[in-house]
Image (tube, rainbow, N blue to C red; front, side):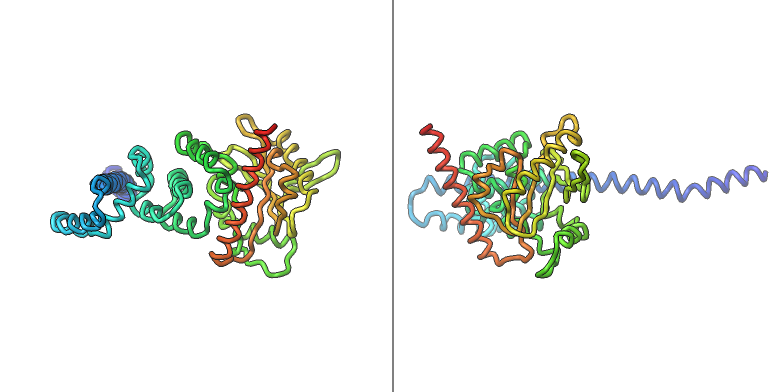
Length: 361
């Protein structure tokens, strides 16, 4: 009898634990299903908005009469609001028309709505350049940005800070197409210039050690500014060459590039001797740290300033070295726009000159 009571007591004791585990499992199952349903509904609504916008756009294009577009949108809106509610106001209909204009390929829309919500597309529609819009759309898809992150990236002019924006349109389009169809990243999609590091809260006078210490304190923020795919490996990585020790400031690995990334921090303007230093580090990493299946290590030299011609003459890209400025204070959007516009114009002119020279040769 005592034995039966003891066994019953053990069962009673185990019941709450078993119930807790069961509830956890059920919650997971239900929440996963809810997320899948919400995602399916969102995708369906987004595609509906594209079809509605595209159908109205086709109607407007067929009618050449001036003012017809405005008239038809207002007329349709009145009826659709009565039938289906405020989601079809004239303002929303115009947004749907714009949606179909800037994303004319239905198959591209279908591929994007697996990750992007209608709110993502609302943030993308106002962007004026096709490449700029496609860049943000693909980065959203691959890096799973929420709408807030997307808006933040657009406000920080991420696209204009990538090397991709400085390339001729045909070359930039080819890289974006590889990203879209093959999920293939290139360094020009990963690295940016300048990097905005105002979150480090550095004062006017600081040493390289202070710079590095601040990055380590704010490593999560630094990784966000570097972009998706980076993983921290080491600080002051010691390497020995000919019985002499050298130290690499920061070492990362980029998952999508499948390459080690060495970062050197410099307080002043870029100097030519930095190239030899970084080349030495990259050769050592290639020989002793690179694993099977990985690409060659690449380097990023972060400087307070740089001179374009010096960097161009050194042809750093051939050595897998990228040079970028860093900003310790967040500039106004106007100042940043002017700075990036000049850099983009300069880079594109150089591409044109190089193309002409190659043709002549």
